[in-house]
Image (cartoon, rainbow, N blue to C red):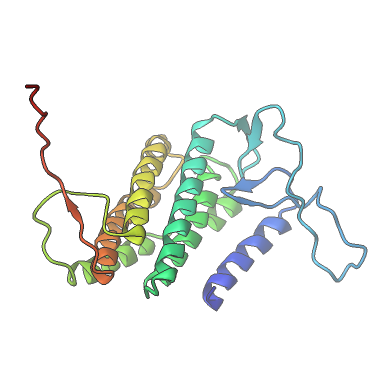
Length: 239
């Protein structure tokens, strides 16, 4: 992991644990400080306990402290972005096995999806200006994705047909991540419509699916794997 990414994750962890609030959960990162197991050595950082039992009755907390059912639209969106991060992680492992240089970009995307999670977990209708400020998501992240898409598109032959997920393990895993990304976008849109999520997050997920599609084609090209072209299948006639 690059030093810049380590700094991002470490900074996020420090911010979360400093809030001293039980039950704050963002995607797969669970930071519980007030009920954490604390070392007797005050110079050592607090140990973070994975379970708190606060969700045993089907409720969980947003970053703003609001308790909601676990099947609330916010947690549906968080779950989808979590799944997206996992599928990108799988694609990244395949890309590293193949020695692709774009693996670092997938790692950066995974970290930014944690930022997306913290944004979703803090409804923009919350009253805490400090928490709203801390979980802002910059439109600059969208612009960077667009630059990456243009860069890789320039290295690909024009797309003249529909293709189905194929082109090797890396490419197919990226197509899987793309489809999960589309679902995450669909889960976030109702929150944006209600003013609980900034539109920059919707734009990022929308552009991310385009990036993953482009990267899937690029991976197939690098690995010299043939992409499967869609063809209309005719039913076999019975003799």
